[in-house]
Length: 261
Ligand code: FES
Image 1 (cartoon, rainbow, N blue to C red):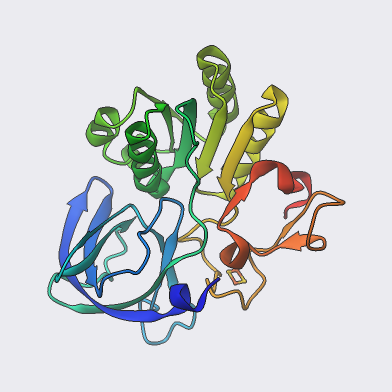
Image 2 (cartoon, rainbow, N blue to C red):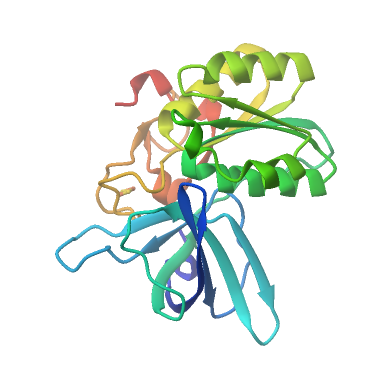
């Protein structure tokens, strides 16, 4: 994690709108030196003064205007303790390694769970801009928790809805029928493990998030060890990876998913 990424920036919330079951925050920060990428997250202060751990949120969009700064789009759970438009908000990030895009147009499957669907949708839009054919799999255990399906359908060649239990069959069937050569996952580690397993069975590449932004107990700064994952034996850099420092996006075949807690 670079010191640039770790710098906390004073920003201003310029919009806080409802988005289905979630809220969409637009936060203006001093201009980012490097554009944000899908798969990155930000670290925000705790919701209340009596809480210690910060909040972590996926970045779901960014645009930078000369002389104005960078606006980050953040789709977040509607907790009732979010800053209103006009309030200041200090953010660290965008943190970490985002998703890489293929160098030539391919068919891709992007699976995203719940609130991470906004980051998955942004990834899908980036992939389409790069000439890829994109199938989104929106995973949610409650139908209300799929994010903004109208925009998702505009930005992908197909959108498929499922729940976490059905995600493995859905991703496998879709990847097989479309001949996808890269599978992506953003959201809970269980979904990442599922997508990495499907990719391994089909002998295709996977890029997945190694932590779930928004999950409880994360420090987001590489200090607590909560996000650690075991690496496949014999891989580089010892036996574990710390996704908030070394990721959050990881190659699916590097992690020993069977050994994650
Ligand atoms: S979230 Fe604390 S070390 Fe990664």
